[in-house]
Length: 355
Image (cartoon, rainbow, N blue to C red; front, side, top):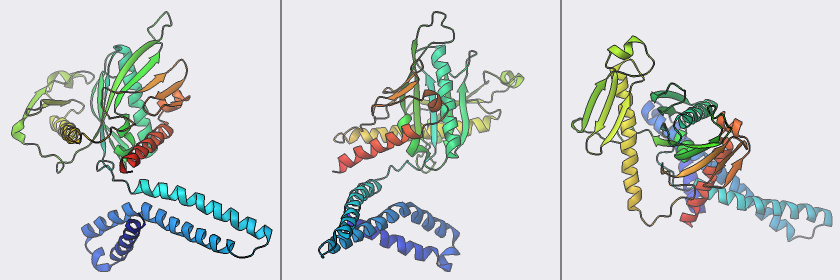
């Protein structure tokens, strides 16, 4: 591992030299590419440098302990030695994680689909709660949210809602949210106070660029129709809504959020590319039959991943056995603790695969 890390540090230093070269700086495209590569390597290089300092401190303390020392000074050196030894183990684990193969989609923006499942109106209302939770979380991360499509019933919430989230590392943090989210609470329409259980399905898709997925225009059937829902006269008179069917796969997407048919078509194509990419990656993953499934879930939309229990004010993630007694905070976008635990579990699982 140390040889690999040293090679990375050497490459890092080489990039530093090239980035500051006036000839390279004159070529903005090349300079930006090198700067991005340098930035991606900085975390592991900084950690490796800290690791080397710790090894040096360990060696220094070890050498000093070979000498004759008075009791007080020996006790101090022994404490430094033990501290450095503990730090060495921690840094080695952190470096192993930093060297794990990166998910190529981690830096991508995401498209999120939330659909009400079992529970009718109550499921639609909870789908609205989850939409608010993710948009609030996105705000705390400095990410941008854009509505792509929505079907909102009269009672509130969403039968389904599709939106994009754009920002650094959006997929790396949100990819564990795919699956079935279960809610247990007393609906506002329940006069007897009986607790109902409803489900909502969440899908988080990395947004595909045109270079990621090539779609033949001849494989598309595009239909236009009048948008439904709020919107006044425009809704009834203008065929602005767009439905696109990808004939080879049967994938259907639609968008009616914009008044412009062209804008709706562009948004629908973004969702279609993401879905086709997801299908291609799922097929590729299925071929790797020997790989062990992740302990934090397969990302399958049919997998029940989390329960939100309102009477007890708790949220439980079933994949990692984590329960947080702060339901209100979580639904208000405080997802850091939950997501950090899922990321850590995912990294630990990858380490087992490597080891």
